[in-house]
Length: 206
Image (cartoon, rainbow, N blue to C red; front, side, top):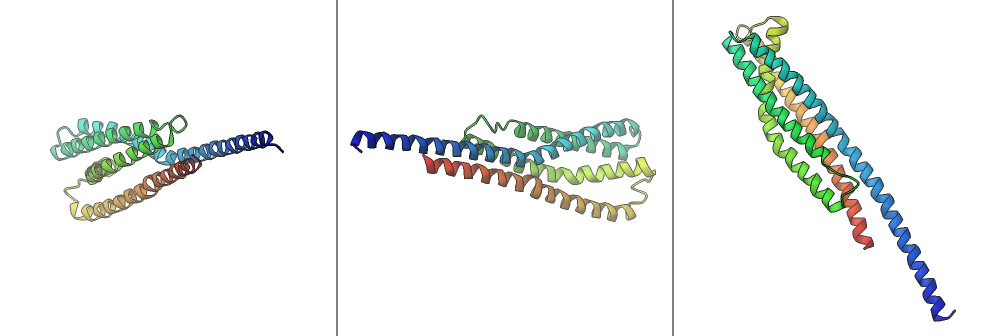
């Protein structure tokens, strides 16, 4: 085999190798991006349901404001509840916008990593506010639901209701911790790992 034929064979081999690497990259990219999108679907769905819940409660809190306009303690609770719900609703809509703004298939990996990191930081920032709003939302809604459903005045039966509400609030904090841990933090971390795996592969083949 002369040098010309050898070069041609080597060139064909290089082309096949390049095509094989490119095909592997395409397959890995598609698999990892599909998996990344799937991981982020769970927190997205949770946020959608949260937004629906907050919207429903906003209507209910507005109804209570009108109903208890002559009852100062319950009116105050209704206004506090509505304020907390509106704030929660704003945060929920902001998070939904972040989730929907992630373009999994038309952006490069570095841009995707940057976007996911931005979403992660925003969620962590909002989480502090949500934890402050949780006791306000829980306590005021329990006072109002107790009155609405059972016609029980909180201030009359506070010696009984305060321990019950305290236990309920602790359970709510635990539930919030578990949701953040397993629906948000865990899913975002898995997405970051999938994108980093893809980026590492691209770096190796370049």
